[in-house]
Image (cartoon, rainbow, N blue to C red):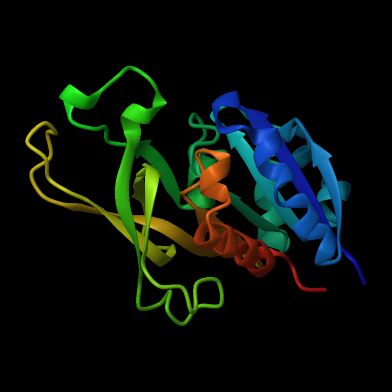
Length: 232
């Protein structure tokens, strides 16, 4: 029996929601999913459609969500629909909704910049070399098992989060004299969350297409999509 994946994309164009999600549509189809694509999260308010959806792949940075759509999304996940995504498309969506933030379990706060002398006034100001460290849980979890620590040069997300997430990978923000914090900060990079009968998967790398095509990032996302999807 085939499963249904709903791809919801939109919001801030700087995260390339169309091109980024297109990278993963062939994978979902190869895995036996019937894929539906929508450009408005209002589809979440369609209770009948959501009840038939086994996986939501969301790529909607910032933007807004109506109360009806949010209620529909939360109800669907609680009933078993999986929710998955990467970077700002899931961890920086619908900033004005505390109920959405509770569902996902982590929220983008910032991405620290380079030394002021290196700042040029474009997005590369926030591209840092950093290490993604697999946690002890991550070393045995099906999403990240077999993946060693790896490095990226891209935005290093600082995430505000709660204790209901299961963290599979982290990154450490160092102390720099040009930043105001006084000790290192460890932020989750990859996490899962159980919500009712549903599963939530988040990976924070994914600012640009080249990051999504990194072998480690792509493997983690593909495994995360399958992990989050409802089993039939």
